[in-house]
Length: 481
Image 1 (cartoon, helix red, strand yellow):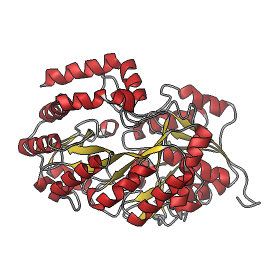
Image 2 (cartoon, helix red, strand yellow):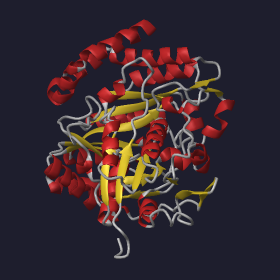
Image 3 (cartoon, one colour):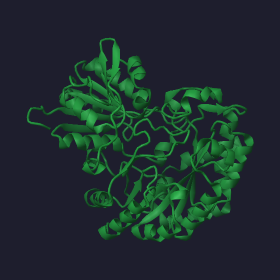
Image 4 (cartoon, one colour):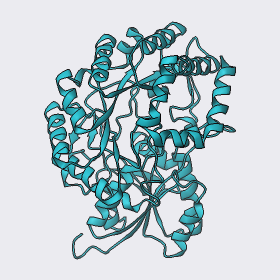
């Protein structure tokens, strides 16, 4: 912040959003509550520049609109910023509308992937937002805040109102050196880290935390929204990564870190350096990574294990080769099978990430995917319901491949809002539940999760505390079969 720039008060809000079918319990909240890392990075960046920032996470603390109301009564902030996905945008719009009614002079800003994808057309339909931030947010939001909104015109990445029209100066190139960023300010989250939970059976010890150490992806899969970072790829240095883990351990007592990077192993030299730095740091933390099979090398797995890697998630998506050719860059199911075996042989858990309902999906392709998954030596799996997000290559043409109910609140990979030609939503849901039932109904899977009693005891405690809900879900899955 320059001497001429006034100190601004900013409230950053992570909206709740709808994540489950109406009338059913939101099991996603039981299984996983992740810190809003984008907002925490923005908060740290603005505070470094001399501004006062508060963060409120409606997802971790639902039904607490009064907290935001109190923040307005205690002294209205100069800006209230929301970061929204497609499914949480309606909740952000609801909150912004209430805020503008209660305190019209507060400037409201919305950013995140949904705004980045839809841009001016979104703000035209939602006048409760004064500004939008598209793409990477740190520099654009800082410029907006420090000009008190007057500098919006001509600021790359910022959408603003010019009378009845919404203007956009164009995208901001994602060139920020990630090592110049302060660490995300986890301390601004009420109840961190205990109020936040990693996915069940995906960690050995609690508490855990989520971190992102790179931005972007060089691939161009049909279903991925790349509207924020586009096809750029940047990463933090190994020293930055190790120091972040050390700070999480020393300051917050974190015992396990889930690196949420799209592909932690994309840069092999950096992967080696991260492992070596983590070994030297002696934090005692374990960690998970996600990777593409073609970037994992058997020779690197012992080093990952020694550095504390507990689990590697692989985006496998489908067991149908034709469907993979249509939608995923550089996929080889047999190579992935080999990598899963190598991961397990190195003593690291392997999680398979699958997706049902892509355009071109058929009964036969679903069966091939289920059989493929059952034939892999996986430790765990997750099955997502394909969702055509506005920033994905498929979005503009999706209705030519089947039926699409563009209900933003349900566009979260937990509902079949798109149904490929030749299938029905009811049949997709039936096969989805069958997938889980056949995977977890095997004796080998039952024994493996029994071993989690000593490998991940906190997961079992969480599971038992919510046993009635899991049993109700299991009964529903049996009925659907």
